[in-house]
Amino acid sequence: MQPRSQHEIRPVFCTIVPPHILDKLSQSDDPALADPARRTLEADAARRTRRQVTTVVRSTVAPEPEADRSGKPDRTIYDCRHRTHLPGTKVRAEGEGPTSDASVNRAYAGLGATFDLLLSAYGRRSIDGEGLPLIGSVHYDEKYNNAFFDGEQMVFGDGDGEIFLDFTVAIDVIAHELAHGLTQYTANLNYYGQSGALNESVSDVFGSLVKQYSLAQTAEQADWLIGAGLLAPRVQGVALRSMKAPGTAYDDDVLGKDPQPASMDDYIHTADDNGGVHLNSGIPNRAFYLLATALGGSSWERAGQLWFDVLTGGELAVDADFASFARLTVAAARSRFGEGDEVEAVLKAWSEVGVPTA
Ligand SMILES: [Zn+2]
Image 1 (spheres, protein in one colour):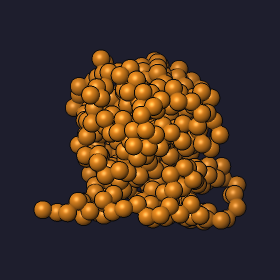
Image 2: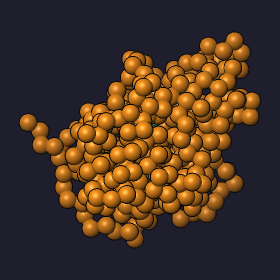
Image 3: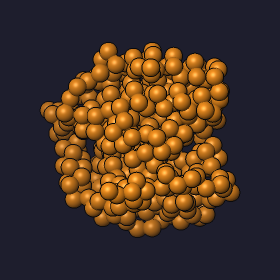
Image 4: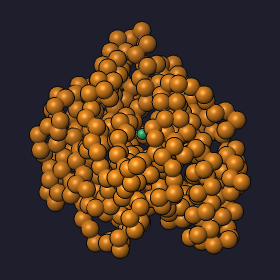
């Protein structure tokens, strides 16, 4: 049997815009809306099958090294110039000043903010804990309606301008994608069914935390949206997802209505979208929102710490369901804060979304 520390890791290929949204768009009668969506779907499907599976060594079993909070990020931004060859032309290296291209500067800042939160709040140096360089490519393809992390780097499209805008505008989208790297290097949750929805939810949680941290917002001040600012003005909607009120992010003639459930009562059983990973993630997302707002203050401090503890603690199974993740958050609250308000708040949050903790 393979020792756990040599566990093979298959990177998740997550695109921030889930297939169900692009499917809906591709059915539009208006070619200006349908064509870019169809091209994006085809490109993503090809990349999923073509993508090389890289192997990295899982290191959660080894004791965490002494936290080194003095690290600096190592970022490089490339410009694809509307082609699909990666990474493209190098346009900004670590420590260099801003360029005249706002997409380049936003990507650079977003990678930096994610690095900063992991380091300052949790003492983790980059997503692998060992200072992994962060690479981003902007202006990928033409009218590409997505952004993704391919296991090695971030890639951003410009959007079609009709439905989606430049994907570098949302810092939580950048952090969401990098958080897939964090999960890949730690709990490595299987990207299917409930463990896949947890994988998605963890990325939304850290995506939102990076945004809140960079804006110095409290739980009460945060919008708890994922991808705010990404939808073009014509779209009836505010974002791709809402952690506060899953199912309410958009309701639009072309996009349809946000299908996310907010509790186990409305859990969606489907084979699409890897068993609904972008749908049922609304349930643990709302549990985190309820916990963070119940505790108040900076969400990354207590609520975020508990999620980070579970993700990196080595106890979370790769095929964990919502209930086992929930039980580990209760255990993490007991171990970090003792019996008290935090444990009570964690129990209440899961209970409100219908996930059992007993
Ligand atoms: Zn994702």
